[in-house]
Length: 454
Ligand code: ADP
Ligand code: MG
Image 1 (cartoon, rainbow, N blue to C red):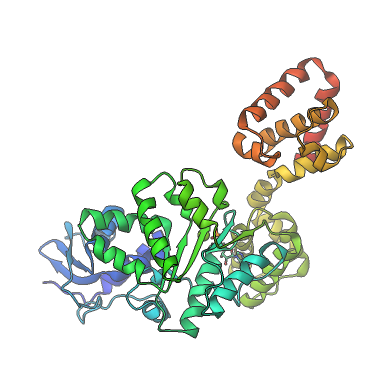
Image 2: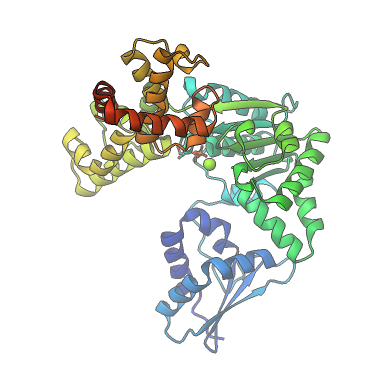
């Protein structure tokens, strides 16, 4: 066997990280052992069938490309199962570990998986609390700090990029620090499903059940993912019940509230709502500014003028992930070109993002603006009253919601006092029709659109 001491393997790992990210690397590739090249075939070992199949299916062709670029003699890849008890890094193959990662994560859950995927940056310390997330934060903190189960499950929900995953990881880190003997399982619903399917395929459901049902704390991220996946739901429900009955803490997140989850059985939904349901709202200006200040301080290398932070907080309103991304881009640019950060540079570097955020109008804004425009109280406009003076503006607001946001008809209906999507569709058509003959209304729509979308 040709042995290059793993230098080419390290380079392949680096390329992999670049292309698929640190998390994919830590979760998947880092579990492989490298045994070198044998007659045109790269020999790798995987700890489980699941890992092997996953890597082959999802990353096989790219890995092949990477190896081939290292050595054109490489014709194929073979991933064998490692003998039981084998550690991934044997002497012949120094696996490139992520810098500083992740011995804490590896030991975090002795036996329970998924924690390799925990992000060291996602802690309570780095989480900035504001009005929109204080309940979710307090609940997460309570679970992390105490052994009593006071609400079970904790159900966190909110839009994309608002800190749900961050809070879950923070709980895991804190529990591990405070009570290292506890078995913490953190898993995305997607991964839960793939493991479950693999367990069925390999007739290994016992191990699967064992793994999740022996946890002291189970956290399942993004459960909306298992909507309409019936057998996964069933298994999830059993796991969930088993743990709750044992009084083990369960934490769930989703992008919407339990009652808004579609394609998930009623009995599951009702049980999901038994504990505490905490909603993370979109950020407000103060919180966005707070988050930016905290991140800028942490970065330390370059000074970020406060007018730049204020500008970002005002303009990037979609979610925290995008906000962070914007700041990072400005920081990276300034570091690269070695110039101090200015407003001009910020506008320049973020042109596309600022434009995209400009176009986003929320249903809330539309409702408020339309109510004000027609001199109605918001509650009146959203009420069930059918008087023309109220119904017409309501239809205008629905129409604008359809035109100016990417919300679906059912979503819009919900936001207008729980109306049916057909009502919204009717409103949209009605206003379209009326505009053709009613020039006053047509003008109203044009003016409102300009007020809202700029
Ligand atoms: P979600 O899981 O809700 O989609 P994440 O937890 O992945 O969102 O958060 C997206 C990004 O925003 C992460 O980098 C996270 O650290 C950051 N973030 C979100 N909320 C906060 C907050 N309140 N304080 C600090 N960082 C936050
Ligand atoms: Mg998430």
